[in-house]
Length: 385
Image 1: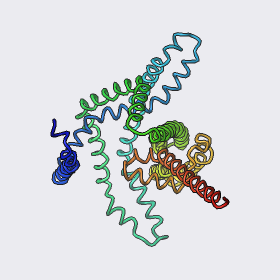
Image 2: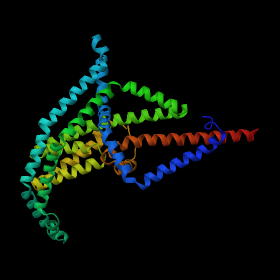
Image 3: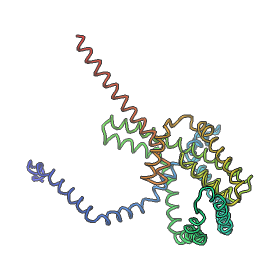
Image 4: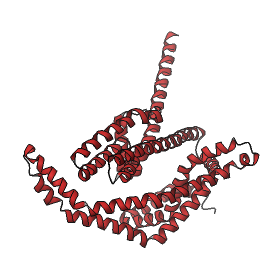
């Protein structure tokens, strides 16, 4: 113990720590596969709890609204128990939604895919005939290129293999999936019930570690990011429901057998700004074109583009109310970067993060301008004296 307190040990301690760091880095570099396998193993353990956190975060939006509603009740018992009643209500609604999807939506999607596979040869022949009718306008052998690259039997085998893999893969891992879903659901309940305690403990811990100025700035921008995420999820969900419902009704009127599947796709792709709606619209138009002919394809093009314009110019501005005042260039850059780093999830969360980063950068510029103006005023005051 006396050696540990000696000045010589204090002088050698930085070199000892540096040697330990060098050894750790060397070990990681020389056996990187072991590090990745360890990280993968650890991620597999915490994955259900991560899903539980995401579920609790999403369900906290309707839960908070229900708790405010229960808080206005005339009966004192409901007002006092609004927190527990809000959590119970939102999970009952969530389970009801899952049951509704499993009983109504999933069978319809499966039947639509099966119907598409059964009629694929007809759709393929229709597409070949359509391409053949326009070949003489562009002087290219498109028919030969399509028949060479896209054999119908290969595409059918790919679709059938995908459906079989999805079914048997789910069945084979049903035990693990149910266990993870159960852990995620239970952990989300506890997180939602204890969210205030978790937030308070985290604030205390952060304030104890970092200086007051850093803590204050962190809490400020974390609150802004949280607000942006909730507002973005809420508005995009409502917008997706409106667009998906309108698209489903429109294509059902046109007689498309895939109206429900395409409407759900358009609603889900709506979470990805700009790119999502464009890609979903193109896919829907192609499906209608191949399955119902050129005339219905043109009608679907007009209807879906009109719906997209209605969403971009009326529905979204009403919902967003200028919340994310980002230029299209910044939105495209943020979506591209988010997709490169975290796939679909990164593209979904890119806009709220970019909005906070924009505010942070603008605040920094304002601070630097104020500091420069203050220094310039001080210099002028000294010169006047």
